[in-house]
Amino acid sequence: MLTENEMITIAEDYIKKIEKESGIDLIIGHEVTIKKSYGHIFFYTSKKLIETGDDKYAVAGNAPFLVENETGKVIEFGTAENEEYYIEEYESGRWPNNRRVNF
Image (tube, rainbow, N blue to C red; front, top):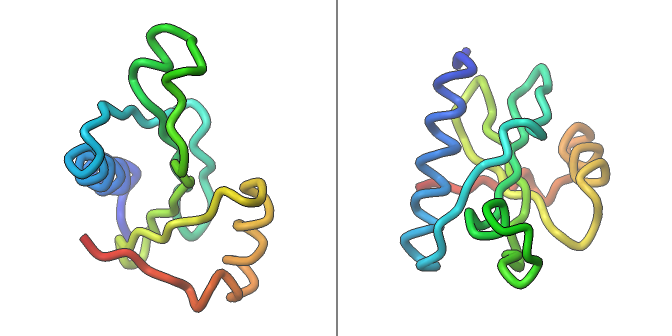
Protein backbone atom coordinates (compact mmCIF):
# COMPACT_ATOMS: atom_id res chain seq x y z
CA MET A 1 0.00 0.00 0.00
CA LEU A 2 1.30 3.43 -0.94
CA THR A 3 1.87 6.12 1.64
CA GLU A 4 0.17 9.49 1.41
CA ASN A 5 3.43 11.08 0.25
CA GLU A 6 3.83 8.48 -2.50
CA MET A 7 0.29 9.18 -3.73
CA ILE A 8 0.99 12.92 -3.70
CA THR A 9 4.15 12.36 -5.75
CA ILE A 10 2.19 10.35 -8.32
CA ALA A 11 -0.47 13.11 -8.47
CA GLU A 12 2.18 15.80 -8.92
CA ASP A 13 3.87 13.79 -11.70
CA TYR A 14 0.50 13.39 -13.41
CA ILE A 15 -0.14 17.14 -13.21
CA LYS A 16 3.34 17.85 -14.62
CA LYS A 17 2.43 15.76 -17.66
CA ILE A 18 -0.76 17.78 -18.18
CA GLU A 19 1.21 21.02 -17.73
CA LYS A 20 3.66 19.95 -20.40
CA GLU A 21 0.87 19.10 -22.84
CA SER A 22 -1.21 22.21 -22.13
CA GLY A 23 1.43 24.84 -21.47
CA ILE A 24 -0.55 25.96 -18.40
CA ASP A 25 1.00 26.11 -14.91
CA LEU A 26 -1.19 23.97 -12.67
CA ILE A 27 -1.55 23.43 -8.96
CA ILE A 28 -3.18 20.69 -6.89
CA GLY A 29 -5.65 21.89 -4.28
CA HIS A 30 -4.37 19.74 -1.43
CA GLU A 31 -6.84 21.33 0.97
CA VAL A 32 -9.75 19.79 -0.99
CA THR A 33 -8.21 16.35 -1.59
CA ILE A 34 -10.68 13.61 -0.68
CA LYS A 35 -9.11 10.75 1.23
CA LYS A 36 -10.71 7.34 0.83
CA SER A 37 -9.65 3.90 2.02
CA TYR A 38 -8.71 2.97 -1.56
CA GLY A 39 -6.80 6.16 -2.43
CA HIS A 40 -6.89 9.93 -2.72
CA ILE A 41 -8.97 12.04 -5.09
CA PHE A 42 -7.12 15.14 -6.24
CA PHE A 43 -8.40 18.38 -7.76
CA TYR A 44 -6.33 20.88 -9.72
CA THR A 45 -6.57 24.22 -11.45
CA SER A 46 -4.32 26.88 -12.90
CA LYS A 47 -1.84 28.66 -10.65
CA LYS A 48 -3.01 31.97 -12.16
CA LEU A 49 -6.55 31.35 -10.93
CA ILE A 50 -5.31 30.77 -7.40
CA GLU A 51 -2.99 33.78 -7.52
CA THR A 52 -5.51 36.23 -8.99
CA GLY A 53 -8.94 34.81 -8.21
CA ASP A 54 -9.89 35.80 -11.75
CA ASP A 55 -12.17 33.23 -13.39
CA LYS A 56 -10.66 33.99 -16.79
CA TYR A 57 -7.79 31.73 -15.67
CA ALA A 58 -10.06 28.78 -14.90
CA VAL A 59 -9.09 25.57 -16.65
CA ALA A 60 -11.70 23.72 -18.68
CA GLY A 61 -11.73 19.94 -18.48
CA ASN A 62 -9.71 19.71 -15.30
CA ALA A 63 -11.39 16.55 -14.04
CA PRO A 64 -10.54 15.30 -10.58
CA PHE A 65 -8.56 12.09 -10.51
CA LEU A 66 -7.97 9.22 -8.13
CA VAL A 67 -4.61 7.74 -7.22
CA GLU A 68 -5.22 4.19 -6.02
CA ASN A 69 -3.21 3.38 -2.93
CA GLU A 70 -2.84 -0.31 -3.81
CA THR A 71 -1.65 0.08 -7.40
CA GLY A 72 -0.56 3.70 -7.82
CA LYS A 73 -2.79 3.90 -10.90
CA VAL A 74 -4.35 7.21 -11.85
CA ILE A 75 -8.04 7.10 -12.70
CA GLU A 76 -9.56 10.20 -14.26
CA PHE A 77 -13.05 11.16 -13.27
CA GLY A 78 -15.23 13.38 -15.42
CA THR A 79 -16.50 16.94 -15.33
CA ALA A 80 -20.12 16.49 -16.44
CA GLU A 81 -21.24 15.47 -12.94
CA ASN A 82 -20.13 16.40 -9.44
CA GLU A 83 -17.38 14.41 -7.76
CA GLU A 84 -19.84 12.45 -5.59
CA TYR A 85 -21.27 10.89 -8.75
CA TYR A 86 -17.86 9.65 -9.90
CA ILE A 87 -16.92 8.43 -6.44
CA GLU A 88 -20.13 6.41 -6.26
CA GLU A 89 -19.58 5.04 -9.77
CA TYR A 90 -15.99 4.06 -8.93
CA GLU A 91 -16.96 2.46 -5.63
CA SER A 92 -19.65 0.41 -7.35
CA GLY A 93 -17.22 -0.68 -10.08
CA ARG A 94 -19.09 1.17 -12.81
CA TRP A 95 -16.77 4.12 -13.52
CA PRO A 96 -16.31 3.33 -16.95
CA ASN A 97 -14.69 0.00 -16.95
CA ASN A 98 -12.42 1.37 -14.23
CA ARG A 99 -10.66 3.40 -16.90
CA ARG A 100 -7.05 3.74 -15.89
CA VAL A 101 -4.55 6.28 -17.10
CA ASN A 102 -0.97 5.17 -17.37
CA PHE A 103 1.76 7.73 -17.69
